[in-house]
Image (cartoon, rainbow, N blue to C red):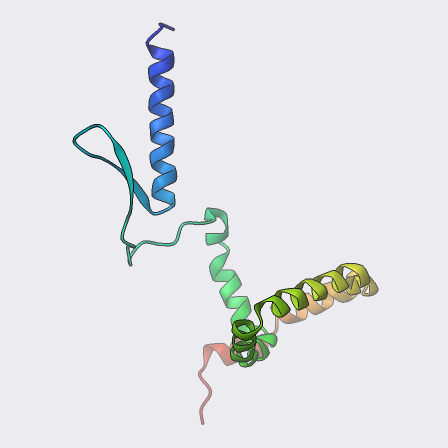
Length: 142
């Protein structure tokens, strides 16, 4: 390795890494005529897919399908406006109550009260329910 390969390659890698980080944050580095650099915010691209977890993208259709069939979905959708309103009025209380509920679940561990066979049966019943699949395939007639 020559003397110019090491520092030049390191500087190029650093510049490429900086450009990738700025692009991920929605910015770009602009050089003006005097050799000074400034950072500008890029306008959002409406067609761009949000960056994120590539691994979770392949599970997204399965997860969406599961959520459409989930019985608690109706409860979540009905309570969303109430929770949003409460969160805007009292954000600290909402975060504290969520942390308290999580701590309570971690301490009580209600899932340990159920046996593995019971959990497997409930999971299988939820995933392989033929009545729900037929109802999803045919729209209900009023």
